[in-house]
Image 1 (cartoon, one colour):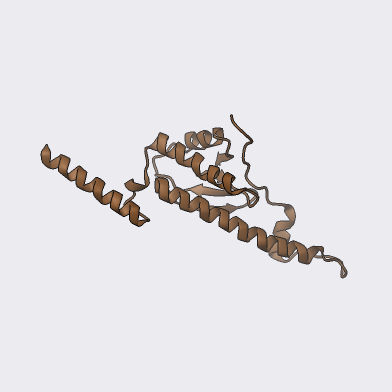
Image 2: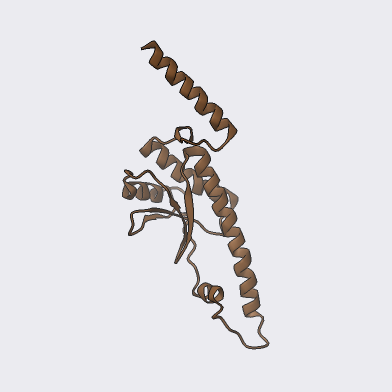
Length: 168
């Protein structure tokens, strides 16, 4: 193990109260208004972290993900149906990124609004490496490439495949 393990952000108990409007404060207190402002900025930052992770996963291995903010914040990987999710979750977790499998068998990769840009990159690279090695999945394998470069690469790969079939 190298470095410090990146952990999923644990959502504080006051978070739910702020979202439901159940939080209250004395009349002179600025705590509640500051907490609401902090929550808004934290959500914006969390969305930005999620967007970077999602884009990285889509571009490199063609895997999409969803943001989940329950007791911990994570992205849930949309892996192929036949995937051994327990092995994938363990392998990512061994890469110093908190990862786990939920009761439904989905793989969660922990994220936090407090990650540096370098840590966000690591949060993308670790699952990419595991998915690439264990599943052999590449973005160019996707039926619908996301970028112009991927479309070109996919077209070249398809032409080369057709040429090999013709030669046989």
